[in-house]
Each structure stands twice: as C-alpha cells, then as structure tokens.
Length: 251
Ligand code: PGA
Image (cartoon, rainbow, N blue to C red):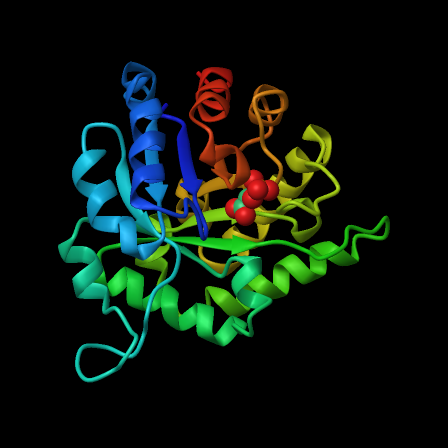
C-alpha cells in the first residue's frame, strides 16, 4: 500500500515571509514524521519558491489554482510551465472557495486538462453545499464529476486525485467534519461514478482524499476503513503541532 497523502492548503496565509519561516521551522522539527507520508504544501504563490526550496526535504510543492490562458502577454497570470519549472507537482483545482468567486465547472475542466498536459497532478475538489437524507447531494456530486472531469481520457484517469470536500464542512464557518460512516458511503459512491466514467481498473487507481474540518482529534477515525488515502487540510495546516497530530493519526 502506498503512503498516506497529506495536502496542506495554506490558502491566503501566512501573512509574511517571516511567518512562513516559523511555520516551516516547526514542521522541519518533525521531518522524520513527514518522510513517512506523501506531504504537499500549497502556499500562496508569492511564497512558492521559498517553500519549494526551504521545504524540499520535507514536502513537495503544490499550487492552489492553475491558469489556462497559456504562455505570453497575460497580465496577472502564471503559466503552467512556470509552475512546473519551480517544482509544482500537484494543483488544487475547483476548490469551493474559488467557486464562490465565480469559477465554473467548465473552468475547472479546462484547468484539469491544463494540469495534466503539464505533468502536474490535478487534485480535483468536489462537494455538496448541503447533505440531505434523500441523497440529492449524491446527484450533485455525480454532476460535478461528469462536468469537471469531462476532458480526461481513460488513459489519464489514474493520474487524478479527487478530494471530497463537502462545502458545509470547510473553513471557519463549518458545521464540523463529515462522520466516518457518511464518508465511507460517499467514497463508495464516488468510486462507482468514476468507474462509470472511465473503467473499473482506472477508477480503482484514482486516489480519493477528504477535506473539511480535519484535525488531530478526528483524523484517525476519518482515515480508518473509509476508503480515503489522506486529507486536504486548511486551518490545521497552519499550525505545525496540529498538522503533526493529523500525520501521527494516519500512520
Ligand atoms: P479546513 O479547510 O480544513 O479549514 O476546513 C479545508 C480546505 O479548504 O481544503
């Protein structure tokens, strides 16, 4: 079995280069722990070089979005080849916080194709706004997967990483994490949809992560027997001790 995966989504934090140094120092103290997992840090783009260089023994570099306009005169854009050139290995795509800023499923589909063409692993977020008893939210997940992964060829499917991130569980206004029972059911459903879209063999190879209010207290239960391979972590990824607790819980 391959290593558990942890992706630290720093979002729009920390707010200074010094604070990045402090956080990286805290994480480096436990570097032996992070060697046991596949650990990615997705910092704000301004700190990507710093994180890529200073944390190269600890983690791989990830990015939080991906431009699709290509090389050339596009003010404000950062091309995939620039990201690849500074060592980006994975891109978080379709996060609900980007959708809240107007990103559509068609945009995400384009970003997924762009990442694949650059050899950067697309970590595609999916997740319902509300969970209901009748399973309507599952239809929503299905639609999101079909729309967002529409451009992926069967031969590329195994390169995908899916992060199930129910919107109601993400960020500081969250209602808390999903239960382990609901997570396990949802992962089975996601895998079924993936095998309808691609084929069973490819679908089985696609890594599924969970994200939303993960912390040291719930990580162990959410990881055991739910079919996920690891976590996409927001708030708890900004504190070295919290992240170490999560890592210990999944080893
Ligand atoms: P959270 O965020 O861990 O702060 O809930 C998760 C995410 O947005 O990826």
